Amino acid sequence: MTMTRFIGFAPDLPKDTPGVIIDCTQLISNEHAMAAAPAAAAPTGLVAVTAAVRGAATVTSTTGTRHTYAGTQTDLYEENGTTWTDVGASSLSGSSENRWSFAQFGNATLAANNTQRIQAATGGNFTEVTTAPVAEFIVAAKDFVLAFNTNEATFGDQPDRWWSSSFQDHSLWTPDAAVQCVSGRLIGAGGALTAAAMLGQTCIAYKSRQMFQGQYVGPPVVWQWDSIIGEQGCVGPEAVTDIGGAHVFVGEDNIWIYDGTRAVPIAGDIRQWFFTELSGAWKGRTIVAWERKNNRVWIFYPNSSSTGNPNAAVVYHLKTKRWGRANRTIEAALANYKSAGVTWDTLSGVSATWDGLPDIPWDSSFWQAGTLSFSVFDTSHKLQSLIGSGEDCSLTTGDIGDDIGVSSVNQLVMRFDATPVSGTVTGQIRDELGGAQSTGGTGTYSNEKFDIRQTARWHRFAISLTGDVEVSGLDVRAAKAGKR
Image 1 (cartoon, rainbow, N blue to C red):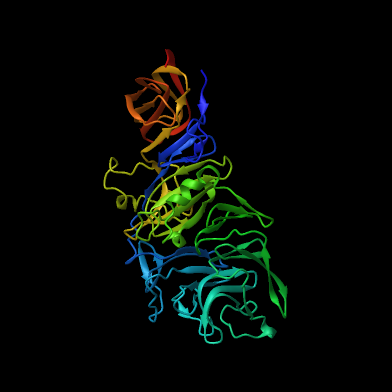
Image 2 (image 1 turned 180 degrees about the vertical axis):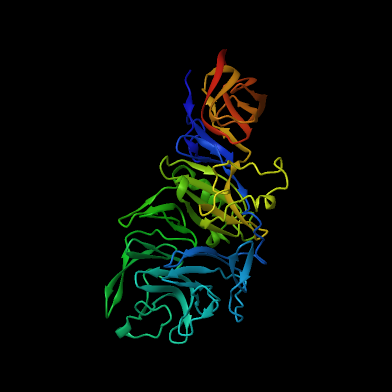
């Protein structure tokens, strides 16, 4: 049997490319196959945050204590068992558009929202750092905190300005070369700073079409910034993630990976499709997050039908370089949420009966205390870990056939690494590759195959699957039926 292996979601490729998936839902790549995207599971008993979550972080102090924070327009909350405790300053007001940026500096957690001065907490409530600027986003960098897109009394509102706190002191922001508290602008080609993240010992600052690399050089300059060659940039503060030695980020016209040497485009065969999908009005709210355990980068983005929140997602597997899709609407993402797990005492909070337990594998981090889970906040403001069994998924193949010979398909065989509970297929046919599609045959899954009858020059198959599926390829069984 000649089995054609799937090459992943690649809507920009010619539709007759062997193994191409031209459309899919809840189907992403793992190390060896395309797999059903994991369902969401809420941590046991944890209630929803009181309002829309506009940024979240799990941080670790120098003693190893972990804290999970979530920010809303007007407040900051810390996870406390099954509840969210208000730990924000009473003066917080936010704005209609503000997002929260978090950074851990020793035992201090810092938070910025582009409206109030930077806030700080050391295990208790957040309070205003009185000498700090208002900043859109912040980064913990070596012995300093760096703030970007700032507003304060000395220089005013300057979207291309950066600030460095004093050496090893997050609470002191009064300019003084003696304590290495300095500020400057990254003017370059103009425009506002859009994002920043550490990369090894350097900090990368982004504009929409420009990048700068900042390196600590000591006083009086303290931080030296050099422009990186190229016109690549980042669309928003959360549209970049560190994958351990490199950044993956969404730019204005490509998706990039930067390892400190050069930026390489990786959008590849989804590029035109993705940037047609991406909302021009809301692209700045794109969230990029690394699922470390499974070596996948999730890009949650607002599409053209979004009213603000990311409502779609593409997923890139770093090893196989295959793309998939796993749409869901989210408010924020947490790449390293630490679950409390489930015990006999808390099992009733999951379900009152054995039959009511969720369809989550027993080796999942859902059941294990202290393990890290890739998680998101949904639009009910509730934390959900993406660790459940595979959701129902679908895929549409490319066109299979040729320009002259007519073939009659009688069977579609698929190679499943994990078999579905059930499945259906609907065929589409046409006699010219550029012509209109007509509905072909239908079939249901049985014994790792679909029986389906249709005759044409070109055949396409839309396949729906239920269960925790992994599928790596297909073989179309067809017989020659003459020429036209």
